[in-house]
Amino acid sequence: MEVLRLWKWISFSENWSKCDTSILDDIAQSWFTRREVLKANSQEYVEFIAKLKRKHAIETGIVERMYDLEKGVTETLIKEGFVSALISHGATNIPKQTLLNHLKDHLDAVDFVFDVVKENRPLTKGFIFELHQLTTRHQEYAEGRDQFGYKTKIALIKGRFKERENNPTREDGVKILYCPPEHVEAEMDRLIQIYDELTEKRVHPLIIAAWVHHAFTTIHPFQDGNGRVVRLIASLILIKHNFFPITVLREEAKIKYINALEAADADQPQKLVTYFAEIQKKYIEEALNLREVANTTLKEVTSILKEKVLQKQKDQLEQYETLLNEKRNAIFNYCSNFLNEYKIKLENEFGKAAKFYISSGRPTDTSKQNYYYEQIVAYASKHNYFFNRTLPKSYFVFGIDLQRENKYELVLTIHHFGYDESAIAIGAFLEYKNLSSGDSMKKVFSEPLELNPHVITINDNVSSKEKNIKLYLENVLTAAIAQIASEI
Image 1 (cartoon, rainbow, N blue to C red):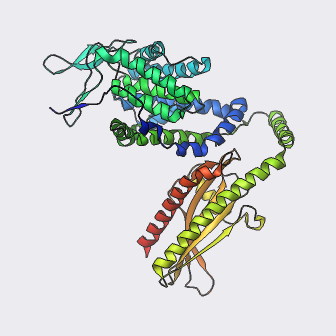
Image 2: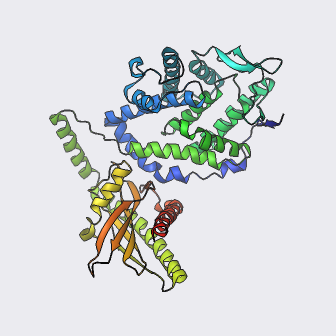
Image 3: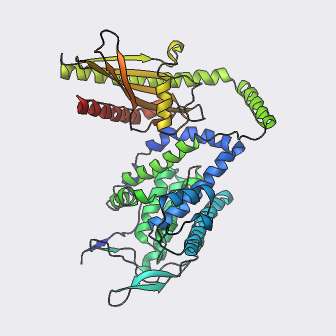
């Protein structure tokens, strides 16, 4: 039998410190600003956090293969709460009450993590033991092997580290070796020590959370329940820094999650850090679309509106808008330089076989603010976010004239995303124009690209966003040119 030893004496290698966190950093500042507003006023935010907790509680058990649950029923339980009547017959592979017990245990554990953050408790072995007891409250057995190597059930030790080996055999026959029981206590002490040191040095919380997750996984300190516990510990670290829980979805478990962990096993941790960043970015984008004002009474919403108008005046609105204009122009200028450089490259490659052209509307050009308005609305609707139409917009048209009966125009739009005015989205759609009817061009279709918008904050240094803006523009051009090449 082939054996793979995952556990080594844990340490924080240089590769971890070099990990790129810009996917999250590019948008984080808008979230920190918006979070304070939502915490103060928004019932939608309260409900959003409650739904995130329920999503984590459900998905963590599915990922650990404790139970299955139909996707439709999952969405209903996330929205409405863990109510027995909402679980239809045949929706799960275990008894309904057993499922509800596990879900309640997982939800109580998530609530416990949020409470620990409020109380500012440190990460200790005592806390980890409490977490394990909560997550396994209704689990009596763990899977093990007897002296002959046959699968068997063994009584689960709760709130204490393992007393026997828990080395599973993968589907391909490879036996995985985790930390032996005699070294677990020392290794967990070391994990907490390194965590404290990284926190003291102000290492990025995303890197700390990913490192703790990976180190804990290689130790595998409990007989069972390790995955559930470590995702909660990683969540604790991120929640302490005003981010969200780490929830691994069932459809991502084998492809993204396991692959990222295996890369980290080989001291290549970037995939795991990036995966955690993508989870946080997704939740931030959802949260930026939450309203701070609920539909209560006419008197209350009128009062809130008046207060906000007065507050805008008090906060030196003109100075703030000048700053936002500078940031919007900086993004526009960077995109302009990139597109013009690429246009020159294409002209050199194609010669006279095709023509390329660029036109644009700056964010300060009031006469062009309504250009492509309907297309932006369609794009935002397709990707399920609120397009703030009251704030300045800009666009680029990257035209490809194949000198036949049609032209293709890739339109890049830069507009505000969600309800916080510091969040900007870059999106794209492709337009096809027919020239067969003489000089007047007849538009045949305008189609949003499948790529999600690239969302960034302009509350901080815009130049730090250029690397990921460039990558997004390259992806947009790749998708558009691939579509055109498929059609001609």
